[in-house]
Length: 149
Image (tube, rainbow, N blue to C red; front, side, top):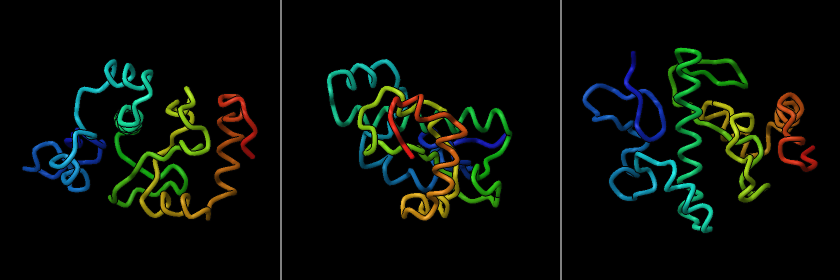
């Protein structure tokens, strides 16, 4: 089984000490990507700390990647179905800016795994049709209790 990055869940090349190349700069310069999140991150979130929101985000993304890999045995883009060995990022269908601090923001129904190219296209607004389809398929309007499309 491939060793996964302790921060993001991407595969790690041998000899890289458990951190992929994309996370390596963050690992050395900030404590945002620390291991062992959970109860403490949630406690900080309840106090309204902005760092805790980042920690909750990273924890949810890490868990989604781990669960995805355990379920499928490999990573692929959930929009295109492609698995080209690139880097795949968790993407929140409903962005944090659209529903700030919503308790369901990090619900697995609101997260998909996508390639960097697809991730960039989402944030550029090029995949509105895919967004609308995901909102309907995953019943995100009911989950969030708001009109999304």
